[in-house]
Length: 296
Image 1 (spheres, helix red, strand yellow):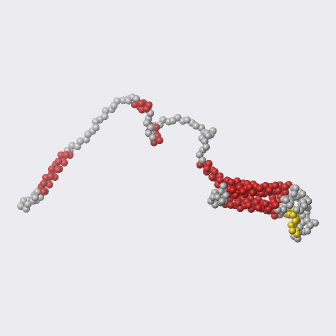
Image 2 (cartoon, one colour):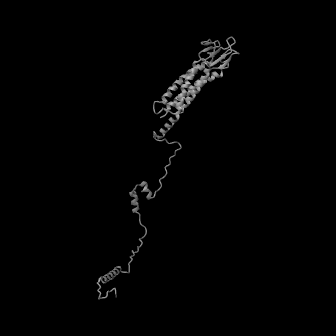
Image 3 (spheres, helix red, strand yellow):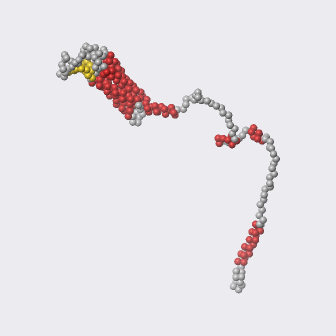
């Protein structure tokens, strides 16, 4: 059996989303700061969940910069750390369940397990989408996410974009795998219809049983129903024979006999004698000297 399309899409989107979320969690690129007055013009500061890096066109990137604004102690950053790690762990679990459910190495996939993995991956996508959206909402608020005053500008960096893309891919992959519940539910319903009832059916409150009297059936229906002959009971036969006959016998006329006034045998004898005489005359030889009967 070929792997269904929804499973194939889920197995493609899920690893991509896991990779993007992993990069978004580890890289220091959630927010970008530019325009420091006491720094070179081309100096850019990148803030992430775990580190702050400084980049300048004439120098290489330098990470491990100090945090004078207590950026890492803010609530959005702390929540994003926990939720992103939780999302990665749930994604790994969902991907394992999806591999066991799809079972590309066998003929038939396990639709129930694949659908369960889709739900797990969808939850993982929500866990990563919430901190990314929350951080993006307060990105320009210096009271929630501390940053130097103007003219320093605050912009979205690449890690936040990767977090959005990874979350969306996890949601799509989880939804695609969750559609595997459709054939699984259909198969379960088919088995339930074919399975015999486990016990006697309970009578509901609305069920009312009425003992109607059995109607008196005619003998043809009563004793010949169902294609079987059932003789009447002896009591009924005795009752039928013990009935008194009322009335008197009516005289019956004698049977009529029809006779033919013409005697058939007599006619047959006459016919036979006439045929015999004619044949004797016809067989008598004729001579030239004597005239024949035919000549007369």
